[in-house]
Amino acid sequence: MQEDQQTEILTSYRNSIDNIDAALIHMLAERFKVTQKVGEFKAKYGLPPADKNREQDQIDRLRKLSERAKLDPDFSEKFLQFIITEVIRHHEQIRQGEE
Ligand SMILES: O=C(O)C(=O)C[C@]1(C(=O)O)C=C[C@@H](O)C=C1
Image 1 (cartoon, rainbow, N blue to C red):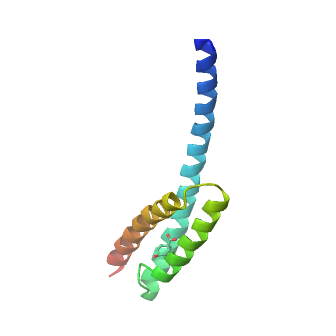
Image 2 (cartoon, rainbow, N blue to C red):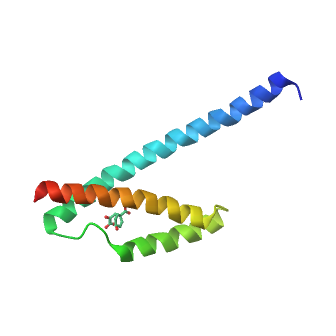
Image 3 (cartoon, protein in one colour):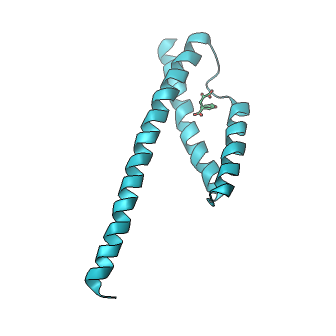
């Protein structure tokens, strides 16, 4: 394959990746808007920042979804845990701000 054809194909793949990354960022921003509301709600009513039972349900659900989607369930679990750790940090900050 000619070099300019290779470049064209790689660029088209990268354009798709850029669109997907943009969608991920927008979805994450929306998720954090909702968790901000959850953090304020929990602080207001004295609920603990973390809920391990809820997290386990989320992990179980996403692992099953991942298997069906042919995505590594371990990766999905790590990704979810990464996000939730940040959410809990925000919840704690909100709680401290309200004390
Ligand atoms: O559902 C909640 O209670 C939340 O605070 C949200 C969330 C999440 O980001 O999904 C974060 C922390 C909890 O441990 C569980 C779930």
